[in-house]
Image (cartoon, rainbow, N blue to C red):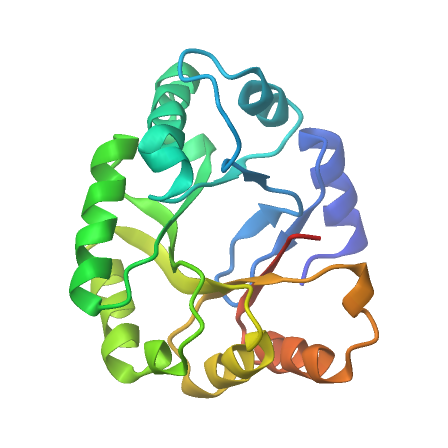
Length: 208
């Protein structure tokens, strides 16, 4: 974990504090920009303003805007002129390994990039998607250089079960999960968060 001084330095330099992301060893901003909303494909002022203020993590998905989100982000990448300055997440809602494999290739083509920083199985609610064949896919995609890290998002009724299983099975670098202030006192969810933290899984809150 970083020191308070390092956090303060990051705040001054980027405008946004950073934290170490799970066991990845990577420092990431504590805020990211979701891109499910309507984006200007030519020059999106929200993306540019966020980036200027230090939000260097953009989250998109194959399903966002039926591909329009990917196209807008792809154009943004050409405008900043340096892919490495942006942490880029995309997701596939496919439920089979073959579909997830196809999904990342589609995402890379639409985004005009050779790799993702994080590829997520999108909105899963089936514990079987944490079976070995899915985790092996994540390892394969990382070995191929198509994504640096692999995980899933979840926002249905079994978030706790999914998080607890992920903490046990390994092979999950990150979880994007539903969490807001009304869940602060949820003991089971807090325990699941702790289990993932101890397992070195990077945690991202959405729908806060």
